[in-house]
Each structure stands twice: as structure tokens, then as C-alpha cells.
Image 1 (cartoon, helix red, strand yellow):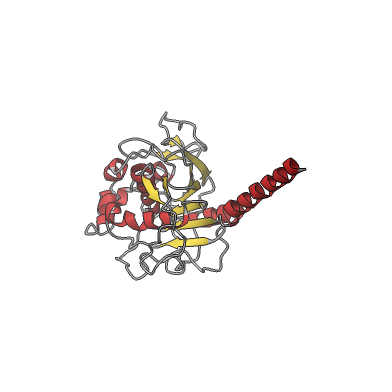
Image 2: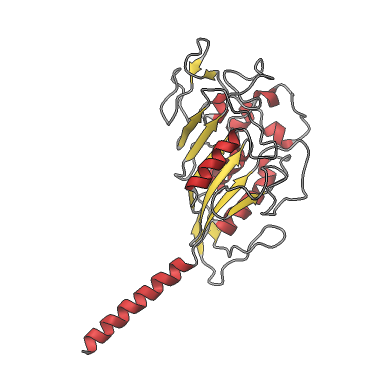
Length: 300
């Protein structure tokens, strides 16, 4: 009888321990915006301002959505701490994150994972101060890197843009310097994602800068960048049926010209109908609309 009592007590304690470790785990959806036309520090480090870049905060965009606001103007290296603060706050301990990024936000999350994703992180309590930082948990626990389920990239600028190469954007900002194709591709090792998959969404409704951007483009980045294509510089890639350049393939397979994607990068969407451009218009539009729909359905 005594053995049975201890056995039942042990089962109860195990069940209680399970409840304690799971009851406080939460999933979050982090949204990392891209370039802004001028330096914006008003929202930097805050997590509720979607309207200034993405669109109405009322839109469904994944569980517990968080707007990771940085200045959208300075060098990736000087602003990346803002992104790491958010990852520390919401993606450590028992908490997990889904990440969505647009344009230069691709460089921000890629930079963080490649250069800091194997570093020791303090586990945080997800209750940020006004500067966007969170306090360490009372136990002082640490972990390696962050808990990230997947990354969705809309119109990714991880491979840079020829518009930065030729000075179509102001060249005074640090970010535009980083967005030059050779610079962006050498900024960090894009193949190192700590095993986290990057789902790439590439738009092709580009007309204004078709003479500058090679192959298919969304008016700001070409397929070589939005498709996560490896190499030291951009190349001309198109949709099937275009006689004048090679196809960007979906998934992880090599492109028609033999070029490959970076490791853990997969083309989830290729705009064969040429319907989606680069711009959110502060209303979740363009390629971002597709990523928002995917996050709403899968970031649970």
C-alpha cells in the first residue's frame, strides 16, 4: 500500500512539473521591417507599432504578433542589437518564435542568426521595458541562440539591390551602403542559419527599374536576392517561359543556370503572374500580403 501511495504521488508530481513547464510557454510572431526613406527612431525598440510600416495592427499576422522596430536607415551592424533584443525577449526559455521579415529585414535576421545564433543568450522574461530590452529570468538560466520555428521572407534583400549599386537611393545612409549587392552578400555567411529555414517569397511586378534590376524584379529587388540565390554578386533570373534569362526554381533545387540557393533557403513563392510588387503601402500589400497570409495560417 505504501509503495502504491508513493507511486501515485510520483505521478502527480510529474504531471504537476509538466503543467508548470508548459503553462508558461508562449509562441510569438516577430515582424522585422525593411528600409525607410529617412531615419526613424520614434518607434525603435517598441513592439506594438505596425501602422507606420506594415499596416493596421488589427490584421491577422500570426499568434501574438510583435513589431520589431529599428531605424530602417543605419548600417545593419549598428541596428542589429535591436533585433537581438527582441529575439532575447520573446524567443528564449520555453517561448518560441515565428519570424517574418521584409526587404532589408532579411539582412537583419540573417545577420543575427549567422553571427550571434550560436552565442550564449540569457533567458528573458517577455515583458519589455520602454527601450525594448527584457529582464533576465530569476533563475539566471542561459541557452544557445534562440528558439525559432521558421523565417518567412517577403521580397528579401539579403542579396542586395542594384538600385543601391547605381545610387538610385540616397547613398548617405549606412543601410543603402549595406544594400549594394557585393556588400550585402559579404556582410555575413548567408549559409549559416543555425538550421532555421528561410521561406522566400519573390515578387515580379516590376516595371520602373527594369533596365537596372536584372531578370525579374518587384521594383526594388531582383529574383536573385528575393530568391535567396548564392554567389558573390547578382544574376539574371526569371519566370519560366522567359527566353532571355534562366528560370528561378521553386524550393531548394538549383536554378536553370546551375546557380544554387543559400543553405536552408527555399523559394516558397515565385510570382509567375507578375502580380506582386515590393511595397506594403502601410496596408500589408505587395509580396508582404502573401507572407502575412502564411503567418496567419501557420504561426500558431
